[in-house]
Image (cartoon, one colour):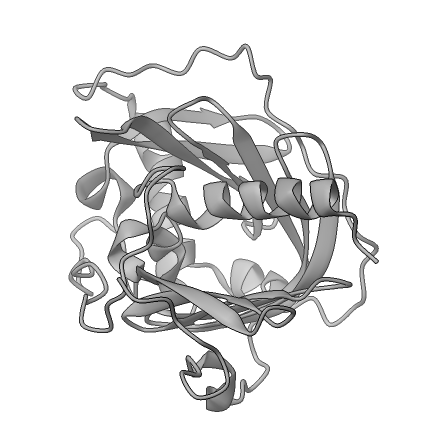
Length: 267
């Protein structure tokens, strides 16, 4: 059975993953009426179209071993200038990532999550855009469910769940129907090498401070590889994904927030 200290560390890492925009110490907001952020228009001038090769690569059809997540250097210095300018190559890379994220409608796979203390957890995830998601953790009573407007952190062990507005979690960037990262978010860093294209998004809040989300896609296959959420205190939670499938049909019931069998604390 999971020891209490390990369970607390796991919950802390989970809080970073889903509630960066709310703040590590803030209470959840119990609401079912907050909409998903307004998506970018479907037609974009100068947008990059996915090639047939990239589209074929999105569904692997093979089972992969769990990857070793790439943990960002905690000493890294990410630019914080909201007026950051990028060259033509960086803009093209950001547009490529935007095009890929916007092309996804369903995404199913496995994940490895690394918390701030280095602890690893695994599980399965399901995405149905816009706004629907489910994370199931192996050997853990925790599940994350998003129904299109709200996100629930469900604890099967305690039969409770906390509800957050989806619009206040960094996961909304992955769940938006269409997105243009350079126009719809505050991108502060774009880097690329032979392995990854990395785009870092920054969000500032006058009360809780600055948080960041770094998205990483494969430089060769264009697929989502991992993301890292950094909370205002500088703690990182990294999620690496694998065995991705974009063609699998997902049961709509997976995205239902259950208020019958799980108690939601009063707001």
